[in-house]
Length: 163
Length: 163
DNA sequence: GCTGAAAACGAATAAAAATACAAAATGGGT
DNA sequence: ACCCATTTTGTATTTTTATTCGTTTTCAGC
Image (cartoon, rainbow over all chains, first blue to last red; front, top):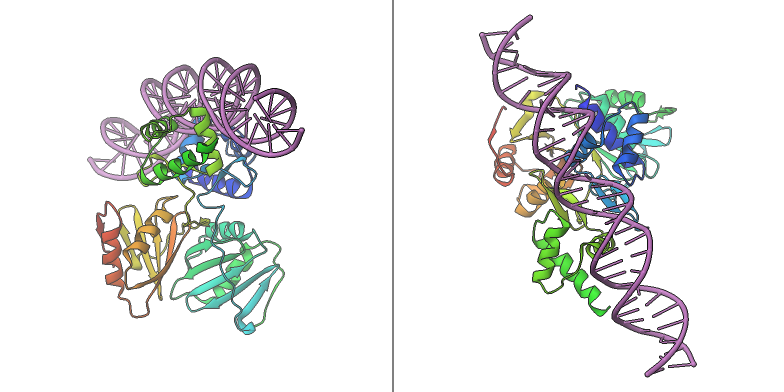
């Protein structure tokens, strides 16, 4: 069962990207993703992940990551242009040991997911809002390395350095 | 019904003050409070109020109000041992003026809440994901102090320093 | 007051989710 | 490799939750 953790990650990804109202629905999506399992196991997984069945604005039941509804919107105060990089529709800026990635609205979670799973040695942790990701970098991390690595990770990467 | 609204208020009060794991439990509390009703109605009430059955830090099911402190998704990269500390199932890493706390999945918000309310002088602010907390530290903060204080806050803290 | 529409409700039931239990898999420690 | 302890899993089941459907209540307009 080495793939329990992968399954958990896939569950997180599915839940944060689709509106599913029963475990059976989720089970079908998991199946599509190549992680077939049973309702019993899924129930246990959801408990572990803290995923809850909540109600959306239309009073429908939807499985949600804890707090997906009221995510904290991060303010993207404009910084100097000279350290802005573009990557498709994504911008990457650095300040101190932090890296801030800006995405199209609603896509921060997916991009963060990809960054997470690259397991870059420079990355200590990430947190995603709606269109912004905060990344804490290792003190020794090279910005150019981080930039290059993220460039590889984020899809459709036409990007250019303005530095 | 004039007292539907009162009942909803009482439900909110009960849910936010007690840890109840089934609707039947809640039903009994409502009864005690003089608002006897049925499971069917309660189910509808909970849906209206957005109250969800979530898991607490002990992996038990608990009905909860939609919290104000919320998050989205997160990362789990493991890295350099030299600045990792363990605290129960929690790891704490430092980089620059940031502290990154890693928790069991789904519990970052709860731990962050506790850290917030300890009102540590070293802590400027926190933001929680699913299993990761970012803490911005005061520029003068000692990492050892932060570590000690968080050790006091986080429950079941058998912990040891590896630094 | 009465009447009709809408909302609230409970009993029964359907649907969905959690768990008991046994089996299978995994990870050490020899 | 083997053994033992622990974790993960599936089946079958129980428990819990959501909803159907018929009834009652509420309230607005007469």
